[in-house]
Image (cartoon, one colour):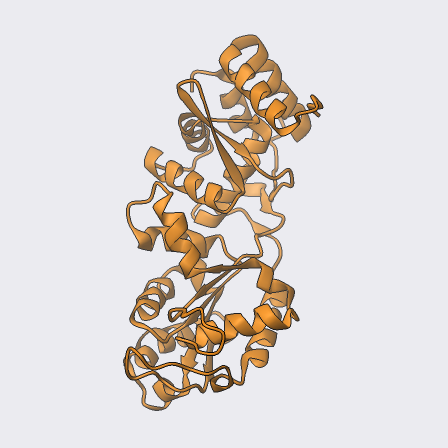
Length: 326
């Protein structure tokens, strides 16, 4: 790493003793398609989403990410395949809820079921008919997840409900076809309430790494993909340049990070001031004060990297048109 201050920061942080102090409250809601009609529905997932949107009883409704949003995010991302993209969203979510009611949802379930970091934050909604007939869904991913949960002394992630299965492409559901929307809502709220709010940092957890990226951007003020790649590798997190670019594009879609071009460079800035991690520092660190580190980087840009200093000033001025650059 050619800039000594970046290396000094990386060598000062003790990731093994660092903790995730809070985790995003995102809920990734997967399942059948939407029709977007007032009285007719194409899936049980659509009925459920309509119910929680209209009743406004549960706060978690504000944090739901729909599969429909995913395609828009994906088209503006640096990812080359949808599976990796969905895996990263699931790893950044407090809970992934899958209605196993369509070929796409069944494929997603198969992917999520074998991801260790997602397994523990996965809730699968199975049609009663699939459970009674011991279908592939039941014998495959459902039983696998049930057994894994039992081995690890975790709550059963499989919930069985009754709703009419659609036989033909033009078949539709009514809102009354899924009468257990409130029960499912209460279950989701219970799962969220019982989810640990903090944990030790795990460099193999993609969600943890993405939150670290946001916090590092808060310290650095702004950074290029190259700079983020270098500092993560110095921290012992081995990531390909392309992987970091992908994760930054996802964080931009979720509005945790902003992408700003300046001259021939593209910089990334944190979009929120709150920190996700409680970073631990080694005993020989120059300081463990994050605000001081941030000020040190601002001084470094001003003295050693004028273009970056001007870029930072430009972005701050744009965000504070009255000139208040606090």
